[in-house]
Length: 454
Image (cartoon, rainbow, N blue to C red; front, side, top):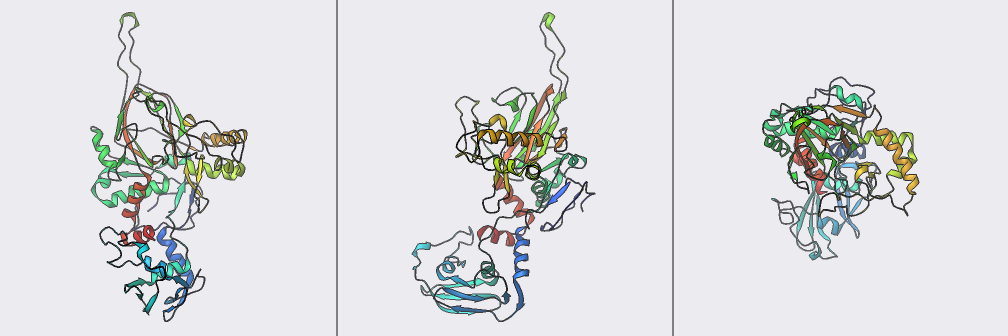
């Protein structure tokens, strides 16, 4: 169960998972339920929309099938579902390949005037004989959902916002548990989904390939112009400040991709003193292994603070679209498919969807947007100030045997300057692949499929 909660906690809905997760960590000063889980959402709709049992009915009308489910609809959006829509969504073995779950027919070979010739409703489903001689059977839960809702939305499970206090007991799982079973992967992905990051303790560190195997328990490692799985020291092998020993402010990686990297991982394999410098009178001892603490900032929490303290600044950073680029390496000039704002909002809900922030990779603030460059700079100054507040910053010292995996769409990272030689390995994972793994290890497949197929 959850450990002692630090700070004020607001929980409006519980997280629905396949089975409860045992937690020995705490991260949240404030817990925010962005919306219910996909499963809760359906159940909440059903419990509020259907009040009493009665005889189910399905009647043929000119517009389509008029449906009355076994549980009476009290706040439905419609009572009729169109004929062509129903025929297109038949999921029998003839219409849907049961191995691939892909549609198995040409939708537009269906006559546009398709209509039922016979309908039978039971307490479990509705069976329709169509004018093209096909027979379809529709479960009531499927029909009832679309009588009360317009579309299936993506799941937005509960997330827990945090600040500097998260360092007291950060979310952590053990390497043996993750490698041994999918329940271990469920624990890991659920913590990343809720808190935005997780440590994996007891990870072997004598061979970096073990870290690669750990990441691939989640999904495939994403290949970029830096390669795939990385293993590097501060030697400027790539033209990027990450390959130096300089301090780095809080930022997200790969802002210059249309879809930035989803997950990112760092595993400190070693941090040792630099070898002595020889050369006659100029000989000197090597640099000591010092510094290099890692910085984490919850971008969603920072955005919440900005919205509360300066709604106009939040509006500006979520409206003004900017260029981003990676141009430091010979022959490489990467930029997204279009301009993107710092705070990307969900087009359907208006809620924060992704943070895209690296001032070093930002291009020229454009004219012609809703707000002027001067207004953007002022809003960005406030954003930068929130990111740099002590209360926002979680500083941790990475250590061999304890990789850090975090959500690059939410959690900003940085580091303090360091001396000596650090060797770090890790990689990127696509966000869609991460979410798929989270779904399929934390929910039964029977509940996942309706969410993604409609």
